[in-house]
Length: 75
Image 1 (cartoon, rainbow, N blue to C red):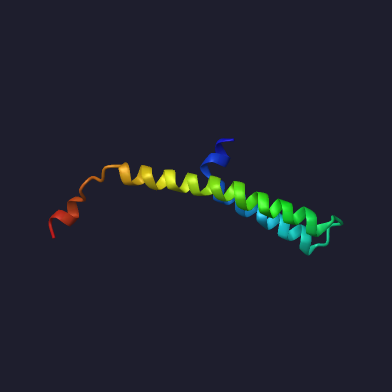
Image 2: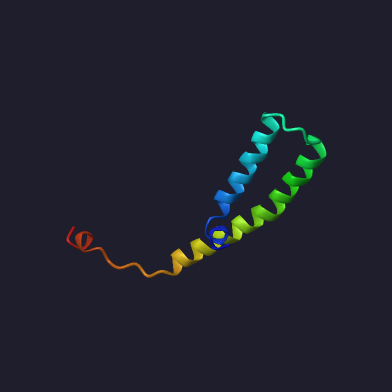
């Protein structure tokens, strides 16, 4: 579960790629209704999770103090 929290974009990309492979190799599933529902669910749920995780990373990075770089002070 921790992996999902740390890497939501990778999980989203993996699931999307697997769905594409299923369609490409012609797995015997009713493509249109199933893929339509799965794609919509991925777009709504995963997109929101990925956005929140990336926003949290950005907020944490912006809140982290930066130490001065000694070499830049001498220039």
